[in-house]
Length: 257
Image 1: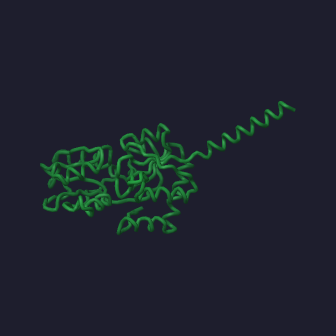
Image 2 (image 1 turned 180 degrees about the vertical axis):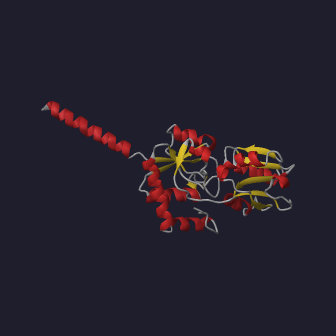
């Protein structure tokens, strides 16, 4: 009888342990570097922004318990494959190159890539117009890859760890232009700091580099989690939650899927 009681207690403990493991939150990796208005830390030390609200909405719709986990942008894919995080949701474009390493959910936003410069400068987003100029881009992004393919023979490409650093050098005149996402740059030029500058136009599209929109990255083979995220994304698009959150930050839709 004692043996049976011990066995039952062991089994119960095992079930409790299994339940605790199953209840572990999904660690959603976001870039530790600020990327307003998508994600940044406020004065209270809390993460906020459009993408943070979308993450929370997708997780709620998918009935997933999620935990925002700041991770350095240039190491975020290794953090995913190394299981330090479970999902990447930090404005990562779905590209052929990244799909060799990780899988993606359906897109949850899709916006053009633009070049921004001082209002006084006559610049277009073409190699000819950028000839002899200094173009700043963020490291380990589709923008770095694009600029190095299309603009490197004409312009000097300067690499920054964050887009905010590139923006600061643009304002101070240390670079002539920067290339980045249109919505992120719209927020910048509407701010006091970016009042000097304007969007000069969108670069020519190249889906092989610029991707097919922004999705949530998951490890290869984790199809169940990917499908849950897809269901969450579909639900917030259908019930108006995506539009409601977007209207708080942007004047137009940023979903092009």
